[in-house]
Image (cartoon, rainbow, N blue to C red):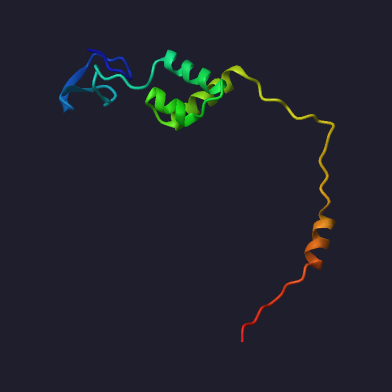
Length: 117
């Protein structure tokens, strides 16, 4: 038996969780169940990303794969960070905003007070 975090062989039995034996590592203190597998396979993640690229919504994909929409969103973001480069803005252009026009409009706007007698 090896620790799932540090790989140490010094593990102790540490009770049961949902009917399965739990172990605790002496070296790092991590508690784990060796038969439990978390997460989805890489194939399922790639399928979700492909469905998203083809136009399905996050909620629809989440229902098909039985995960949350947040998990699908994280997979898509991770995929885009690894496979696509973010476009860099051009150095020569600048954006100028005229605030004078907005100030003139706000200054000339009338405020009315309604009184009900």
